[in-house]
Image 1 (cartoon, rainbow, N blue to C red):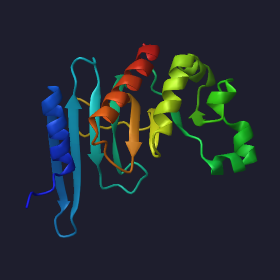
Image 2 (cartoon, rainbow, N blue to C red):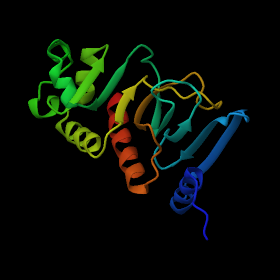
Image 3 (cartoon, helix red, strand yellow):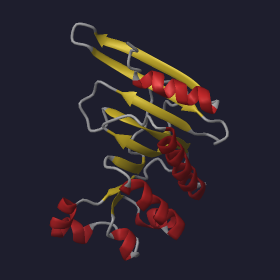
Image 4 (cartoon, helix red, strand yellow):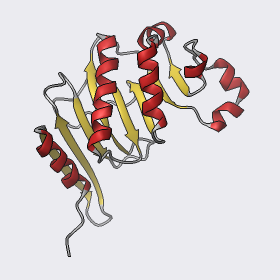
Length: 196
């Protein structure tokens, strides 16, 4: 009977077929209780300055388990942004709904929830209808997908330490599908080009 492939093995196969650089790291924190940290980093050098990262940490926060594309960005250390699909519960909170950031396009604003600390910067980033359509399509394909700036700043290896990131990611799981990874790279590259 064939043994089921681990998440790391699936990502390694994807990287090998696509000719991407693959590295993984695992630290056993407590072998008695099975606590460990796992990280996979994939580099597609055709997409400059990008990292595909899948991580499982031991922290008890909302991003204990995530996977996505990360672009290091300089000069915007205080800028915060989180975009996610708008849920029915978001619509019930009238005060929060009234105060939330809106881009001004009702078909976009009705589908996404944006949290930011800089309305002007966010408006510049999201003003393109092409970007808005790509974001809606990406977020609608499944739950637990996010687009963030300084939301997750992975720092578990020397190349990533101390940097701030634009991230297009999935929480509560790892992306193990090449088409989804390609789509994530594409939207990340599009947003990153607007930041530079």
